[in-house]
Image (tube, rainbow, N blue to C red):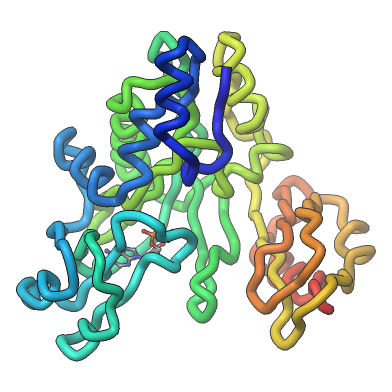
Length: 309
Ligand code: ADP
């Protein structure tokens, strides 16, 4: 059998392997839907899953015809990854700077919180839900900065988030692990932003902080074992370790010993040889059992552990 760790793969090849009888989790049809942002939006619409108001556009001229949508966000259908395929269009003039390609023009949503939830689905359609996590973003680099688990949301919002995330995952009608990214806006309303059909950065903390990690869960799904226990052992805060400003080249880590000596900190470096400003080099998971003020500690970790050239 086969699984994937990134959805930007040759789907024709996967479909051929599937035809030849190889089991692929998640199903290639799901990858085809998710890989293309237009198809992904249509999937949400077809299953009555709430998402930001949007129109499908073929090129830049089409965007100009939908000026009433501004301020808006344009997302190219294919080829975007980690912010590169997403462009903010504040006004009419800004349309000229947009890459002319098929995509989705989405109304700019006044986001109160960005939430993600991991949902595991086995072959029989049983589900296991990890508690939702809350993202805190670096406004300048547009990179995920800290990630809090569980998300700080009220019970009713939690129910809504869970129902929507489960519905997104189940309607794919495929076993797999799905990370559903959502926006919270006015009065706890929930919009689905996008879904990743794989182990995901929003599940890094599950390695130390949950009974069954996302990797353990995926292996269980693949092997046909019962789903694992997603429940939280400790609240956690995940800190991204990103390349320091002004340094590019072979990486050296500053402050590593200090962070390693913190009892509740778990360091993961990705083994990248070169650092660049803003490049994701690793992450540190902080567990709440030894420390109540995790946000303060997270800032300390970010300031201490610097990948420099
Ligand atoms: P990518 O696939 O590159 O990660 P996303 O669709 O997740 O792109 O968008 C990246 C970020 O842009 C989101 O995390 C969010 O902060 C912002 N964003 C995306 N869509 C909207 C929207 N409709 N309104 C406001 N902000 C948005």
